[in-house]
Amino acid sequence: MGVGDSVAARGMDFLFNTYKDKLVFEHANITANVAVVDLSKVYRSKVSGYEIMNSRFIKLISEHYFTNLGYISIDKIVNTDPGKYSFFDTSKHLVYCKVDGIDEKQFSNWLEQLNKSLARHFNSETEFLVADVIREACQKRMVLNNQQTNKIVDALVMNVKDVSDTAISRRHEKFKLQKIIIDLIRQYILDEGAGVTTEMIIVYLEQHAIIYTKTQLTHLFRLHADKIVYTGLSGWVLKEQFKREFKSPSIRHFVESFIRSRNEPVHFSELLSAVNKFKKISENSLRSNMVDWRGTNFVRYNCSFWGISNKKYSSKWNRLPRVKGTKDIILLANKFSKNQLEKFAKKIERETGIPKVHIVYLYNKKHGIVD
Image (cartoon, rainbow, N blue to C red; front, side, top):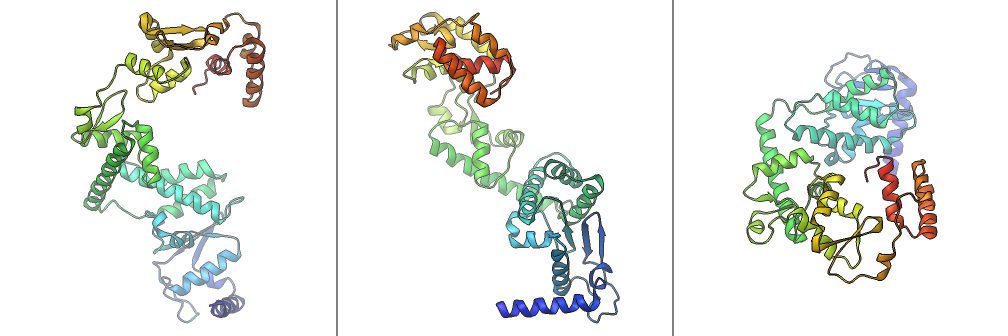
């Protein structure tokens, strides 16, 4: 194999040394570090056997020529692992790009992400332009001038498969994908033994190489309401589970159950985060509700910790300091880096006894940072 490779390389070098740029430049459109070879065209050339562009010979010499000049071959990337690039077809055009600061591995990673983005758009119900999707991907990951961006967009658009004339096939493929997704989610819920959030499902599907948005999932579950239902604070469950065991709790019962499951009081920020995984609620709304519910079930400690009144906690929780007006807390109005905040929070905790979690919560609240 090594000998064959060596012979082929010497043969290529001989061709280029003999015919020089005529081998490629007569047949490739090169602008702004983007080269396109149109394989659908037929050229008449003095070089015998070189008239038909769509041949292994053309691909070989193009690859050899542009690789030596530092270009990246789209055809090489796509055909190395076709499964990753289901929306790209390099049978009609060869595209070569030279992008400052980006090597072949980085470019192939970018092309894979672009393929996923195209998949997400093709699976959606909204209309879109392929050129817009590619342009957005270029702007996110590569620093290019307008001319080069336009050339890369134009070149890649030619290599994206045209699915507009295969609507029936697309619907069938979409139906098959939906069935696969429903089956995966069904098994996921059974394995978890509990309800799951939309965000958990999205992450789970990504692990199976399926990219689905929150809107797409909501639409899918609406179509399959006989199989999967939303209970609110128990998340998505199977229809048969909902009937038997997963009645959705109220926010009050959810919060009470969450606090009871802990051996120590729970900080308010953790309660808010737990509720928001299932049902969006504002901080003020949850806080006012908890004050109203307090009665005999909840007990509030200083520094925004909450416990259950009939549970036995360590006496240290009754010794938490009051925070309002504390001199060091006022300093949280200043901007800190993450490391600075960590050190400052530890210092205040050590000197005042105010728990670090509450100091970070006050800082984030002061600066409008949503965790």
